[in-house]
Image: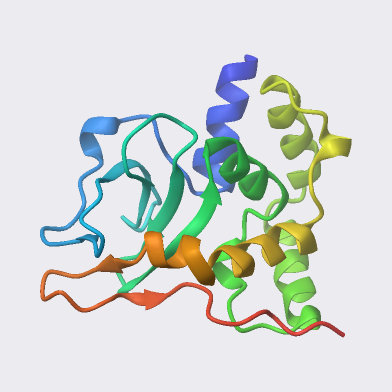
Amino acid sequence: MGADEEVVAFFAGVADLDATDPADHELEDGIRLASGARLEQFARAGSGDAYCFVGEGGEERPVVYVSLDGEAGPLALGLPELVRLCLVAPWWRDAPGRTAEELQSVADEYREDVPDLDRRRDRAAQALGLDPAGLPSEAAALARLVELSQGLVAAACLVVGYEGDPLDPLFSAAPSRP
């Protein structure tokens, strides 16, 4: 398998982020940003949930996740930060509201399901020109999600449904630490 194929396989298969068919990526009618700024879907999860850029520009724009379950929130400030999140904690969707011990259990279960996760992550990182040793820790990546879900970034990335009501936040409070 070539380096590009490994990266696509990791993100689509392990991190559940598929950007391979942009024509397949359309938000539900009425889903928009409260600010009126552009919300551009660029990838999807297997469930149909959406990864979207906020505003105008390129890969440096904030990234929000919009779930079909009525939740949305910022994940990263730019595609490089999203890539690092998905490399170190591809199970981030299971993190909200969990204690540190529960998060470790989620990560352990993920590793049971994907026993070669660390090898695949390292190979995908290297193919992208990233040093695996320089990636953030799982705890740092999750803390960043919580940080982004508060304050100015969260306000700028507030997603509303077709009736104008805000979608529920992905992360509303920091997971407990031991």
